[in-house]
Image 1 (spheres, rainbow over the protein chains, first blue to last red):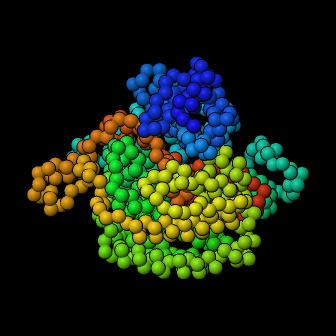
Image 2: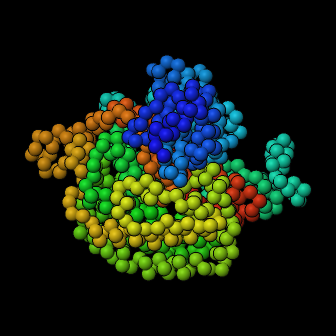
Image 3: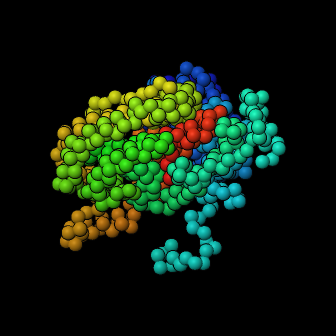
Amino acid sequence: MTSEFVLEAINREFPEAVISSSEPYGFLTVEVKKEELKKVIHHLKESSLNFMFLTDICGIHYPDNKEKELGVIYHLHNLQENFRIRIKSFFPKDNAEVDSITDLYSGANWMERETYDFYGITFKGHPDLRVILNMEELGYHPLLKEYALEDGSRTDKDDSMFGR
Amino acid sequence: MKDNQLSNILNQYDAQEQVDGQLYTLNLGPTHPATHGIFQNVLTMDGERILHSEQTVGYIHRAFEKIAERRNFTQITTLTDRLNYCSAPINNIGWHMTVEKLLGIEMPKRVDYMRVIMMELARIADHLVCNSVIGVDTGALTGFTYVFQDREKIYDMYEQVCGARMTTNMGRIGGFDRDFTPKFHELLKDFLKTFPARFQEFSNLIERNRIFMDRTIGAGAISAERALNYSFAGPNLRAAGVDYDVRVASPYSSYQDFDFIIPIGTAGDTYDRFMVRQQEIWESLKIINQAYNNLPEGDFHADVPEFFLPEKAEVYSNMEALIYHFKIVMGETDVPAGEVYHSVEGGNGELGFYLVSDGGRSPYRLHFRRPCFIYYQAYPEMIKGSVISDAIVTMSSMNVIAGELDG
């Protein structure tokens, strides 16, 4: 299995879906349209491409990319061929919603909850989309770039001597 | 419990007519000796049977990924220590290898072998704790006290390499901060000589013990298909019969040089998970022996002055060394922009690092694939219909490490 082969297979099945592709550090990376995301992953899993192992799901935030501020990144793995693929999809922050893949991979459940918790990306069709690591009363999604690491309202910490 | 919640649970339970008596809710954890950390399970029980369970995690979540966005690449090592604290060197070295991949640094052979030795020692320590704790949860305290002496010996070796015992902060980007000391060689030789007999004694005590077998065989079983669907990796996946091991599938460091096998189980139950770890300890010993006997001569670090602290004496006499020292301590070295995924076989399974750099002093985005976090979403399915004592043993056999669960 090679990157060209996989990319061609995706392009053949979904001619409109692929926005761009690259191969940073030998890892096939494909950006697909948000609407086609679930279909592409479904095809990757169920066809002879056989990406049966979901390694990871995580979110990412680029505040300066207009209309593409938020993204979700999937790492899939074909264990037999030992071939990995990274699927990305970007969307605007005020419409951050993608299809859940929990019905394809049971392991996606908590990973999607984690992504929702940290980035506010909602997964349509998720059976139980709640925050997971942060407390429910927190009320915001802390990994978004607009939130500074330290709480600016604290008065008991004085870092002025450390140049921060 | 609200009525509609209860009826939902009953609807999910396939043998509704078998439920007799009053259902009740049992709060197992967050702080309970059997949860091995802070991890809450709300169980709906029918007598001794578990009908439904609901997990809550996040009690010790420390915003690791957010903090990493403000730390420089060297400082993040200390954060990785606290993920799976039973095998901290694997986390450290895995992180260093991720950054090195991004920087394109080639390691001297000696560093690779030293790393393999430290990572396999860490794996042994991790598996020893996990397996002896399965014993404790079935009531066998003796094995626990046996193997903790061996774990202490491994910690003595860590101390020689990095000065710390538990959260080791071992190694640097580009190698180790010091070579193996003479005392380390002494300790390792002694360990390799004495440990097999002591470990055999532990195995004799537990492996074929009638009570232990009765308590663990068939408990918390998961099929290979379900385990794959849940993204299991490591000993928990191999116990179900899938021979996936990152060390073999995508060799990193110098694992391709060594001869070892991947032990696999068949049933995917608690006993198989225990046995897979037992056999892995023997395989790790095999790897350490091979690596130590063929330890190449050479440098214990790569030639990367931007990341590697110079000798103190040189800092005082050599301007260049002083500049590099300053740059490293202040974290002033940029790494190239790019994204990289690197995974290592942690004590618990595939430990993945997804790193996006925008060319700055700290990562733009860092995400960890924490194996423990992934396993425990399958836990309700694995204990459904079993009794509570089986659920306890199942939990410890999946090797719950709260630091890794919460990240």
